[in-house]
Length: 155
View 1 (cartoon, rainbow, N blue to C red):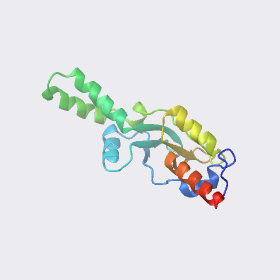
View 2: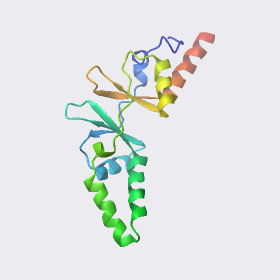
View 3: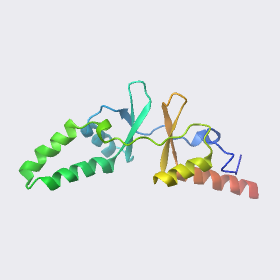
View 4: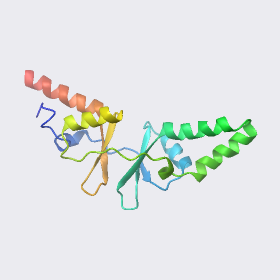
């Protein structure tokens, strides 16, 4: 195993790619996105177009922020609840989506860590050559790999 983060690529640690990330069509309603997020331990959903290509990311905090903005505009509960229902059903994933930051199999672990740091994220999607989502790599997985290799080379 390679201990050098500049020489080790995502492909080299493909066994650490988490394929169980949340994904949905970019046209999904915010209500369905919120339901997906609340019924899992994940905090973001990766949005795909009809060809299965990664086109955006929606985080739970974005949905909560949208609802909070709305609640500040309404004076009482009678006005607020219908407004929240409207937001959850009217808006879709692509309305709140951020452009995805992603890597491919040939990306070095050093570049992965730099992208995570630059974008203040702790996981990054891995895509194939057609930009289809394979899964995600988490910062803790990169760290675990590095520590494992370092320990093995010291023995």
